[in-house]
Length: 225
Image (cartoon, rainbow, N blue to C red; front, top):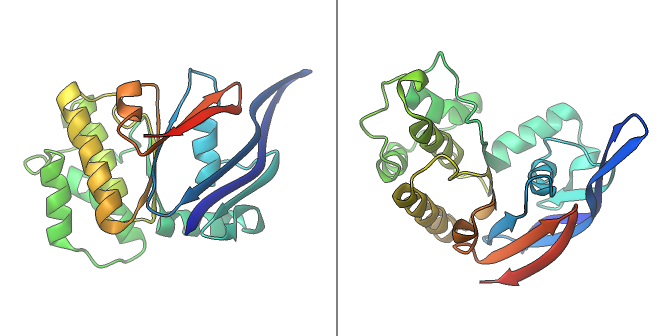
């Protein structure tokens, strides 16, 4: 079953007379439950593609379909609600709320939609990420790597159909990187979640089931692992 699809996706940024083609006719089909890594050098378009897939940016032309819903046909409020209920994001810069403790940050997406809390599942996530003894602390009391783990936990607790992660292991040591990637794989398998990770680290990329390489805004290569 196809959960994500792009059709001739283009994104052009203009700076005066200069045009930058961040994405140029990207066509991707992603089945439900697949674990995909997107790799490329800085400026290749991989992070822009991730934002398009999650509806955080609108394309210059082309379409993004998520669970057979055209994002272009939604209002901004509808896209926001749709994202919250279907997509979990892990950003490079964490986006934690300074006024909430770690537990409250992790639970924030569930609170927004009034979802029931599965404490056993939440406990499994925080233990897997080494956060069980950090829940009452504030974000500024944690290291960058620990804050990254909080952002990952927040994305996972609502069991979204899709996880979009932009350099999710960039602030983690090598051991924690492996643990996080194993957790992602387990989540994908257990809950049939679709995982899409942007990374520059080939070791991380090769832990996915399919690797897509982006170069100059185009798909340069892709292969199953």
